[in-house]
Length: 473
Image (cartoon, rainbow, N blue to C red; front, side):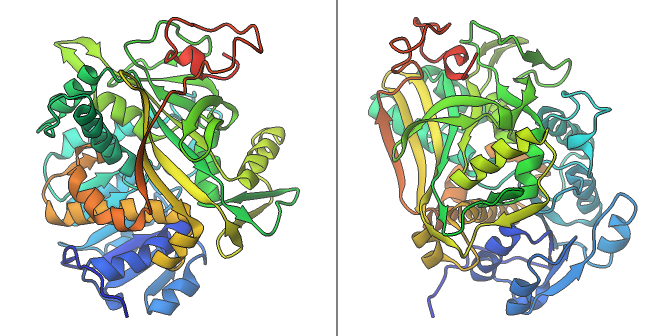
């Protein structure tokens, strides 16, 4: 049997909320690396997904949906001082569970700031109210109210999560290659000044999933390599992006927020219906979906340079996601159904025959043009590394594990975001599960081959304008 490094000791009980694709993926990693035995783990989840995997390890499994009315009653007997709540559920309010854990003296981590069920599709709410910007602001407000206490890590998976840590490492590589001082900054403003001094104008979370199933997608079926409920929810939210100081063309469908940090805007259209031009090393140029993600806002906010109230520098930041081809067809069908979910779902796992998930950060506008840094994990590598995983789920599970280690080791930090974690420690823990982690420079720009084919409205003076990135601006 392989010997695995125990990175830290989880001191109490672990309560996992939800056990879908990511819950199942992270279980073997937790058992390997956190010094916890199955008898100290309890799963609370709304449906039967994960029951078989929990039974394999001998983990208690409670099929109970958490609601506004019952979550305290369900969780109070399970959660106490020194315990850890890992929230991988959907339709369960992150802020409610964080506040509960704070009062109980328990640690916490989630992969997204999640509201109670129904918010994403509530037609009585404005697009701004349904945005990740608004959800993040509720978590930041809770941080101000609670102050220090048990560490609660907000939005730490692969993306959001690992990409914030990869962006920092990528910036240090850029600084080294440019002959600049490449000592890691010690604080938030130091990181923001480093990105400014490097000349980074835009950051894409550029992801291309080429995993392929032996069973084609059928009509009326949504197929994906990770949480289908999660993907549909975020895809139906408005497209969102951190808005950079270099931008000269505000999009016609763009909207600003009336309050909060001011680091991001949203488009008055669903993210899963919004395409952007991007690039990854293995696949090359492609059109991705501008699906809203917490990291688009948190990275842009974290990397803002201010002089008092004046914003001197901020990069444009957003997700640019091409899911597996079966998921692209599923999204196309979903849009045709007026964003009403298909009656059937199929999570790809054992029937994946080939492919990789190429996930990284694309830093653009600096002296070398574009630099992609990230994970190129194949399905074959993922299966060798851990059971119950695809390439996509293992990247997320690795980020979760890294965040949990940081929370246990720095247990009284209160609410923290992925950008505030020790990037070196997270990547040290996660890297063995990411496959090749590579950095590649590129001469690609979003203007490549466009003027020759179409008379498009572009800005040729600066290829890194969002106007040139957005398809059909």
